[in-house]
Length: 451
Image 1: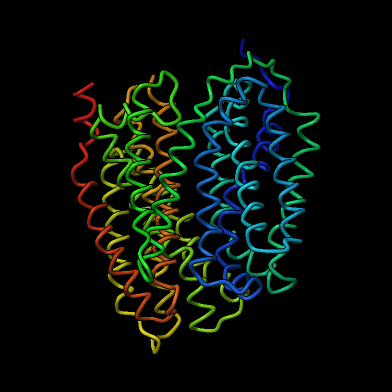
Image 2: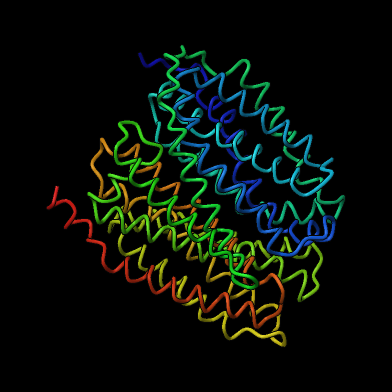
């Protein structure tokens, strides 16, 4: 039975302070990679695992945590997630070696992945009026923390050191946890059913993705063909196994029966592959090639992230009037144009030219994020929204994982403008795919006729 919470705004604030931890921690690391390379004597390929492990753990953790939220109650799981993030944030600054730090990043990702599904469950159950506004406010928490994460990380590292990007979590964790004790509703727990969690599917998915990452990162040296075999066999086994499951980890049947939705997933994965190449690549380039400090790098990165925040409301108004296709084509064009302009940038170019290029790329993200999500919901039935949302998030994580692997491959031995151009050329091909898929998607009036 749906109940109302006495103070909806306080419920949204409590959940928002928790859900911002995942995007904040996934973005702050971009400015810390150079410092962590120095601290642990890492190659860039090694350091790129700090990105990959976070998104891989998030991809595996979030669907599972949604089911655990139903079993144990969303309030309990939300508070447990905060404690997991706190534990990881305490241990990470004292990491004796790099594998230990990777473990802390994975634990941090799993804990923060707990907060979103449990938080959404409470919002949908306990805010009956202006629920759309509440969800929009929570979206602002996430997008803003992701956008300003590099700037926050830059200031923290400049003032203290890399350990500070983990310790900064505690003000948010403590406040959210104290509020959760008194504000979050005590929703009754469901039946504990361990068989609802697809452990075999998770293992096959994780194994195949790890194989893909290891194969890509080996292309510069001795190629690990065994990793490619692991990826292919793991992916084939995963697809075959998930097809037979009543409650799969990833709904692979949904991938094949709706081609328009499949195109959106591929498009969103490609968008994130390109965007995160710049999001994680620019800070390292600015520090190691242009020799900017962490603080200055964080400020420069505001150009990329800030324009995305500015253009998102414009994209929303265009979607309300014309549907998702026109703003999606605008976003794809900005992404293609910004990538093309990056090829004109050289070491002798002024910083302002790079910032102008970054602003174009940032505007693309403001259009693409909201447009792809709307395009997906325009092309799936209402009863498929849950599984479609899960696949949509998986597409985001896959794009981020592939971007970190691409950067690890291209930046591992040579960090210079020529290799930045190499990344841009690969991204340019992906941008053409993104624009082609945007053109291919049906307009809103055609979707309605099909329905």
